[in-house]
Amino acid sequence: MTGRGENVAINTKSMKFQLCPGWLSKNLIDLARTSEYNKSDVIYLLGMAFAFPIIIKGGLWLMDTEIKNAVSATDQDAQYDDKAKRLLGNKIILAHILVKTVDEFRGMNPEDVVSYIEGEPFISVVPVEPGLTNAEKISSGDSLKGRQRIVGLNTENAEINEGLIRFDIIFYVRMKDGISQVIVNVEAQKDEPTSYHILNRAVFYVSRLVFSQKERDFVKTNYNDIRRVFSIWVCMGMGENSMAYVHLAKDNLLGSYPWKGGLDLLNIVLIGIANELPEHDEKYELHRLLSTLFSMELTAKEKLGIIKTEYNIPADDKIREDVSAMCNLSQGIREKGGAEREEKIILNMHREGYTSEQIAKIVEKTIGEVEAIINKREPVLA
Image 1 (cartoon, rainbow, N blue to C red):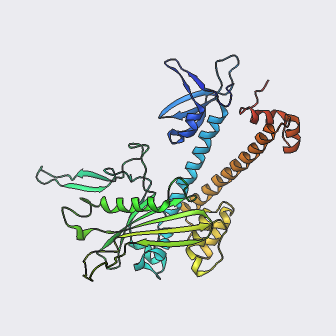
Image 2 (cartoon, helix red, strand yellow):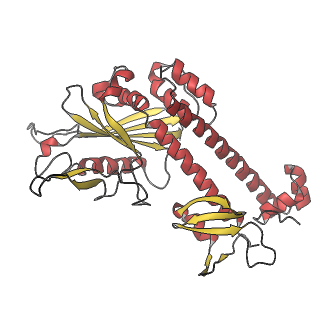
Image 3 (cartoon, rainbow, N blue to C red):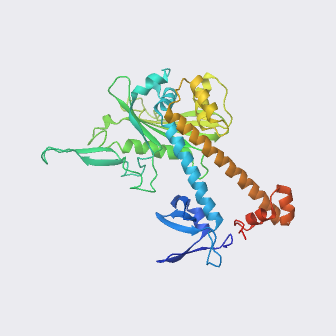
């Protein structure tokens, strides 16, 4: 059994190498998922699958539980994020967001706004990276002369460009004049990032939404054809419910010449959602809806009841499935958080000199379970 800081040695018929748990914990983006096959744990790493026997008596190694748990936790969080995006990507939910964030739709019934959303929203498929947001295709034709070059959003299968950062949700909205369009991007965050300022990332995203329109929505120097763009960020776990609108402004430093152009082209909306479900009040209307959808405390029945009675959102099969899946995943995430806190207590008591017997009595676990946590391994059965 490997210790907490030791490497994991992998033997196959064709290769032998070692993986360092410390490296793995810092590179979870490369870890996909685990599964079980033929009584072995299977870890999918860097696009390759490795089978890890659960127990090997007299063998060279056993899989470090820390690695297995890290992969499982990452997979669970990834599934929750995916379901959250797909729930948020329902047209009726997006319509509720639009009536509170896009000036032209303010005051409208969300049910009437749904028809202005063109096609189906693209969810986690369009890359953010420069040069990859768009994809070029050649239209079919009877002759080379009759074929045309068409540039659109890059919606290729995510596996083709695995590892790229993608817009959470992106879609076109037709304005009420029936002619003009705006491009809307919605991003969901579990909390406010600590490694960077979220407004800086929003500025980058909204800039990409403008820049990527070249050759797709306008050609050559036809800059007057640039579509307005909105990048809307929903941040959970904030200290208070809030909403901020960030946009371009013009200050005359000398003279008052009326420069022509669209100050309304770039738009960022930051929506902060507090942990507590806000009261049923008009000013918290959008916040209460989003808080209900992403709550880890409400049951699926409670969520569906609120969105139906307060927002007149019909609970179709798709919404029911996404809400139910999110509730199940959030339960697992809560249990994982509780287990991590318990593990931290056990390790702290061990460092303070408590014996395994004393710790087991206090936390109400067996001595074997306590020692397994201390040694970062599962108990080996006789």
